[in-house]
Length: 326
Ligand code: ACO
Image (cartoon, rainbow, N blue to C red; front, side, top):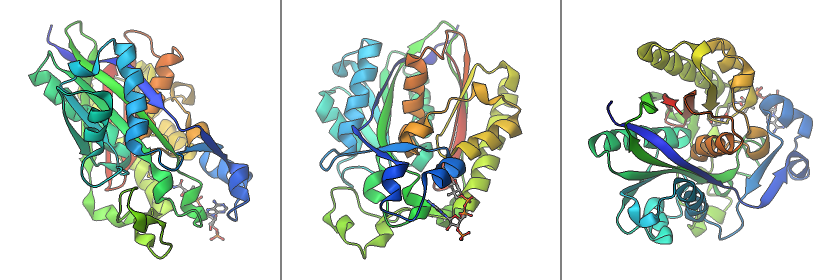
């Protein structure tokens, strides 16, 4: 039996500070009722000043490595999906490498917005197929609070900070990554954008510097997210000869409960099979999939042999899906 990429450890790290919808009611013209009914989000975590993306990423990585029983020195490759790196250079991944002491790995960042973790997983899978003895760390980590315009009620209620990580290794027992499908459409970039500045840049604090903040045409993003993720999943399942009814669990990017309800309906998947934790963390972009995977794993929602479907959609636009036998 050929070697497949298997997830041998998961981890997540969330900042301690909780920002609730009621807290937001005090600073912008919104209400818990509006945010809950339109998005399903009740609270989100916010990184403390000086708590950078690389620190959240390293926290998640340590947990994933501990579960895998692998030391940092055993890692061959580190990929961090992020749109909020501490700096433009070095990469967040190199800072994580330093923080962990993973001196034998090569490390780099990958920008595919909310699909960043999925793109990283796809890439790591290809590397592992070529190098079955490798150990690879794939992380999704964000401090979106640093790029949120806290005066803009259209966006500030949606996002949160956090990190999630998986450790990948080769395994010949038939389980692991069965396939993945990635897509992009750069023609639509203006519907969801964030023009600049890493989080350590002091210019971020200047109110006139609004190009650094997230801008979004919410309704358009919503429509594209449902359609694109739905198409990606349908295509991947057809390619793999898997029926929606065979799936044990679906973990989608945690953007908005209504997006997930529409997606589940479109695919004919009961909502009970869709993992949801956005009420606690909001949309953490690239971190959302690995945080949800870690929570689902630790809650015992994933049994050996289950078919797990991942899907994501984000700025770019970028989107895709992956199928894993757990
Ligand atoms: N509180 C109260 N009212 C608000 C708020 C708020 N936080 N935000 C917007 N409104 C108002 C609007 O101003 C508008 O008022 P108006 O009718 O007087 O003009 C009204 O609510 C309706 O606004 P819409 O934008 O039409 O509301 P909609 O039902 O589309 O919901 C939302 C907005 C939640 C942003 C939705 O479009 C959405 O979820 N889109 C997807 C966006 C997303 O998930 N982006 C994340 C990045 S991409 C990804 O991760 C998939």
